[in-house]
Amino acid sequence: MIRVRLLLFATLLAGGLLWTGCSSDSASDSEPVVSPTDTIAPETRADSVAYRLLQAHGMDAWASSPYLRFNFGFETPGGAQTIARHLWNRNTGEYRIEWSAGPDSSYVVLANIRDRQDGRLGGSVYLNGEELTGAAGETALEEAYGRFVNDTYWLLAPLKAFDPGVNRTYVPDSSTADHDVLHLTFDEVGRTPGDQYWLYVSTETGRLDRWAYHLQGMPEDAPPQFYDWTQYRELSAPGGTVRLASRKEAVGADQALLTNQLALPESPPEGAFSTPDPMLGSE
Image 1: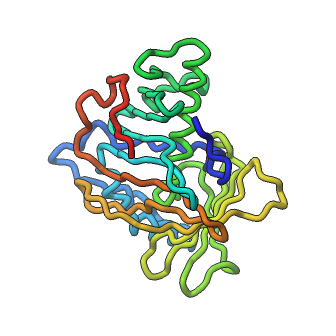
Image 2 (image 1 turned 90 degrees about the horizontal axis):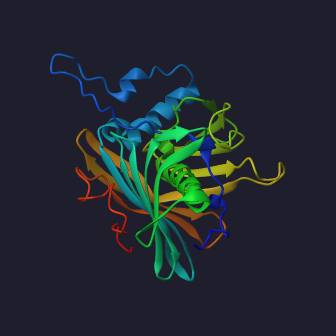
């Protein structure tokens, strides 16, 4: 596998905060349907900006989405490259991730992101259709979980501002007429709770236009890294429209991170969470 070194996104982001996904138990016809944003009562200016962010990106629609499909990769002047392909059953936690081990070799991991014991992900690993066990399989499962944490955060960060353990602060000195700026820090949750993020929320659209981050593993005096969130896609879901950026452009560098091939399918391909051979395409 070619590891991404030219950008800092190889580092696991956001402290490993997890989505629980949709509830598998739907409300009865006699019960009122409560949307996720209805359960939030903003108490501070930071909360209000974060709440507007959730609404602009379609939090309620996202909560109704049973499946998520996307690719994670990067682009430089030399071209674009896909690092991993993801398919997530948000109702059950079932997860499929594929990545290349070389020109003619591919890993397929079939796991359930809710199935973690002693911090380790449970599931099956296949290399070119053959199951891997032992240390090689455990290493691949750990890499798969790392990819899930890292890659989904690059895609879904605007929808995670109210996750448990997230601390929100409004940054008046950085805010402008065009953007409200939120500073996110984390309690002792996830893999890298020392990460910090600054979210530049458009005062016009409420969407995330830019973020900056200083990761736990970076030197304390290292400047934050900035990326513009661009090429927004509008995705239809049972509960409305979800808006997600498919491209993140590094500020001051000719390179970008890609979260593309976005889809919220109503159902997965046959065998999506059981077939050991690659099936998510070669985009």
